Image 1 (spheres, rainbow, N blue to C red):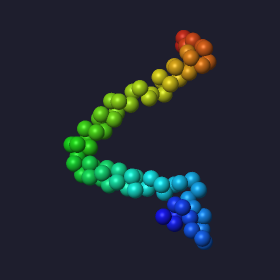
Image 2 (cartoon, helix red, strand yellow; image 1 turned 90 degrees about the vertical axis):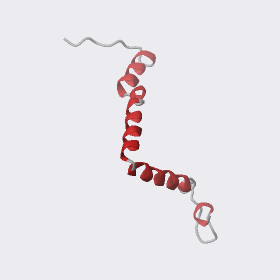
Image 3 (cartoon, rainbow, N blue to C red; image 1 turned 90 degrees about the horizontal axis):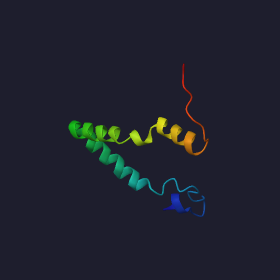
Length: 77
């Protein structure tokens, strides 16, 4: 607790870096367990890849071009 809240000889964790360390450790440990099962890990990777399309840079740039910059695509000759 002294690292997070401080003590009489040191200040506390100003940016609360250690505040979620326990959750981080649990998640990291679970990832190690998941990685040990190669098929389950591959399935999780595949699902992650398939669901990442929404976050592509092409989509983001297209939305910025239409909604923010108000520009149209240029044809390349």
